[in-house]
Image (cartoon, rainbow, N blue to C red; front, side, top):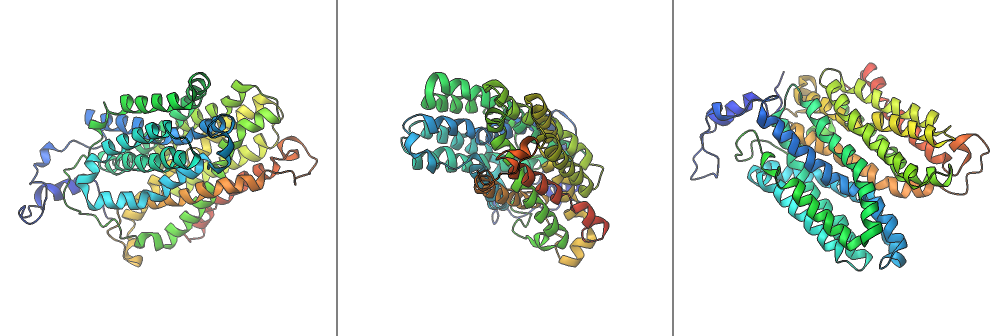
Length: 451
């Protein structure tokens, strides 16, 4: 069995087998393996994970909370008259996801750049928020708070993914789950804080406070977000994406895009559904997203832990079928605010943990000789496996915005119980259907279509 890139064997390669002429190549000098910190344990590993948790939480948390800004922009000048031009938050998240293969590939080709990338990304994100505070038109807002922030987010976030693959091996799934829980935790805090700031101080000052908060929270820990192994010239082949053409990966990617198409819809419409259909107040409506994100913060590390010892197809099946059952049974028949909040907790727990199972596929694509021999992809970089999966999720994220507008409308006149009897009926059905359909990977495994 081949060993994934980023293990202790690779450290030996760095320290013993890469004594290359520094006059010809700008490489790190020969390194004593004893100075390389251990994997899966030790203060440095956990400090790295803590720093990545914070950076990931804010890099993805602010785009996730963009809906709060969007509601404000629609009802306040100077963007009130042009608010229809502003995309949903999923569009901006999709930009970041879609750009990950390119960003990650460049950083893998030029490892020295990745060392400074987290700091550069933080500064770009802060600059984007400051620029947005000065914006007076919708295109300016899209360019700063949207596109520029997404670029900075990708610069800061991609090294966290790449370096974590070096710092953790046996506990890799758990570590990725803990890092991804940062989005769930920030997503449960930021919307309330932003609503308060926007209501009292307006968007300009709120965006400046966000920029300052981002700098204060992340700059002290960015030092710890560093590679475990010394950066050298490119040892990987990041743009060797033959793995993406394997039958196993292609089928997983189809299921991944399918899951993403419906995954983002509840977070967009749950507050509106609670307010317009169930008559919930402002706090109760916002609590739907709070519970969803908190449950996701719990589900991510649990699913990551499961992926360390169980086949990826089984883990994905648990996440998708759990989300599907919760959607069609709990949201579909919710007639009170408490019942809807129960749904939010279950949906966040299962659907929110979906990506934490990706580590199982990363491991499989880099260690399964049956796959590598058939498709000649022996030099697969596990980090690129994750980035291509993220791009698939980006496709679903971008498409879910227009889909949501098409699914919710007055054309639905079915007289039945719960959410199914409202204009949100098609949305509930679609969300449940895409979640259930993406769980087909377990069936594909049993019939031998995937390894």
